[in-house]
Length: 220
Image (cartoon, rainbow, N blue to C red; front, side):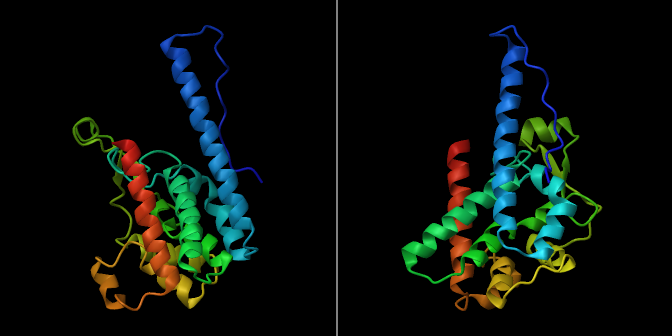
């Protein structure tokens, strides 16, 4: 089932005008968004998990366009940023597991890599990131999105775990802890686990850091 609710404007015949350039950029961005989503969805379907499938059917369109961050100086601060970042994390996790010689199940790498930041979409009904309406915040701070203050206060990891359990996605002990610890050990709620993280959790943390670093390098 296609979850791409977009239509492209007709291609304008006149070339080398600002309008045509903008249209071409939109088409390129659409193709990237489309290709990333198709890869993301295909990998998720490989899990053969009814809960993941139900999650995609219900939240797929919101996952598709969700940004990863609110500011232009941060990674993935654009529509589709979350999916793009998650794909990169899953790829780096696979590579790191091979380098370290860790026997991590492929399904765990896919599930944790792709879904660890799911909480960034928000709850079952409302988005976590909403459009920034303040020109000052957009122009001075590069804040293209702001946090939705109407949502109940939850960490990204906690909201992720809530959404997964709501759709009946079954997690192993290592998968649950990896998602809980995904944002890093510097968070107060995660310090209890320092020194006792599983290989899956450590690989996820390192993959996330590398993916963020790569994105920020491209921005700068």
